[in-house]
Length: 207
Image 1 (cartoon, rainbow, N blue to C red):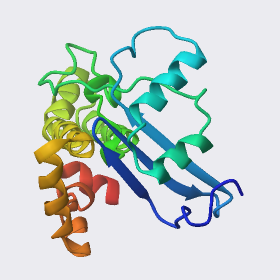
Image 2 (spheres, helix red, strand yellow):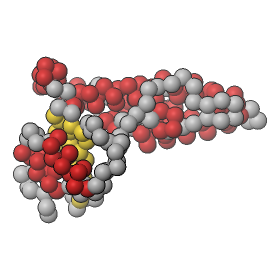
Image 3 (cartoon, rainbow, N blue to C red):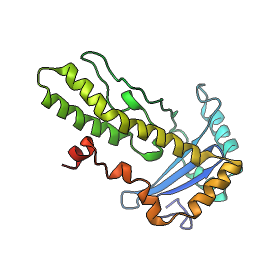
Image 4 (cartoon, rainbow, N blue to C red):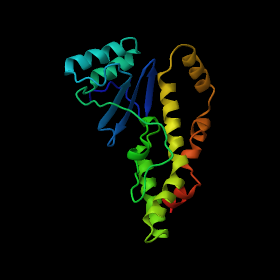
């Protein structure tokens, strides 16, 4: 009820700007409207009160489109947390120890694949353990080898997309020109590698 009808959309909408973006979409048969605001912060590691955080948010978005300003006004800014990723690594474990999910390959949220990659990890790990009964170390190393490239690509592509959201100047001009020339099909095709996986894990998940 609080979301103006001229702003409400029955789809995922992303608003981007220099150093920030907002994503919004309806939930639960349009009874809720999820709004997520992201921005680069020079003071994210500091423990600050609500007023200081809200002031930083307003300063960051002061030149944003009026619709973005309206969306910010609807948000509960008490709910906030830092966002980070890590560079891909070749080894996730040693001996009878391995990792999965964000513990192994933390990624930014721009591809919305954190939970998905963890589920795929679990499927792959279960397979390798089933194939190597009694040899946990071999199963763990096999699992890591099978998952390494796909999860690394998700990490790197997510980081690249994040930069695209937040770019400024000539980079923003290039972004607009590139997106303006894309068809709806092209938007979907660029994610074929992610959602139409033909690797071992992809086949296992589909099964």
